[in-house]
Image (cartoon, rainbow, N blue to C red; front, side, top):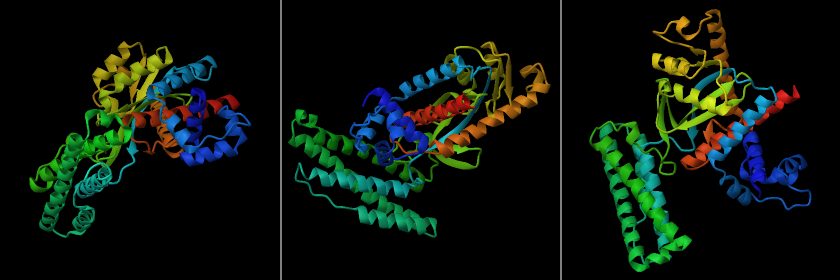
Length: 393
């Protein structure tokens, strides 16, 4: 597939929420979709594996540059003037189950046991399959009535997990002792050794946080925790002191036309106030000009942010809630303050639109780079839909 075909297929996938199997079916069935993706009438339909392999090669930086080109096109067509911008943040959840130490340990035992079974094709290896025992202990922990009961069950679960990790380490040593270094250049054998090492490292981190929390009574910091062995990049995000979410925090900037000018996928759980200046600078780069007015949620407010953003050449900088900052310091015309606050509220609808229609509620792709590509793909699809609506109006 050509780069343009891949990009167009990606847009269709995100705009409709298709799986790769559904995407392959609709590209084979719909002449409109085939024409949009530049697939000829007599060409063979693409298989889902081909679509998946090609779409996952698209880098987030590429999608960001394409989106900036789309914004510039909207400016050239008079759809977007770039004078008023609004910024906010949200959380996109990762595709993981609710993390508990017991379930994470069961995941470790299950995955390592599977790779140990695969190792028997290359070496003679004796190990004990503790997966069923680990599942029983995790279920008992879930239903235990007292903390003392949970501690005893956790001790047994930690023991079987440690035994499985020891067997995996022994399997790696035996593989490396049995085969020369160049043998691991073969995809199957090299991937098996790398997978064992990878999941052993993650299992040790899970064991460490379990011992610290359950046996040591320690409160493990969120930055030190691992919440998934399949998506170890996932962050723990406490939103509005109410909900605890697992994914990544995303900062976005939208314009008056409804187009998303820019977005940033962050690691960790940075406070909004640390990102206001960054968002303003990135928006100026995306638009190629300074906006006249920028409005943020109250979480972005600080006097330093106000001064730094105004120093960029932006005339009016408004925070919806700004304790300690007078309205006249943010904006000269006080009657416009309430209007800009109402304008900012529109970004909540844009975020809802992205979550309901373009997959921002939950990212189904693995790895941090794929998470960013998925996020930007949804932004690009949403902007194309919004641009089409403007041009048809």
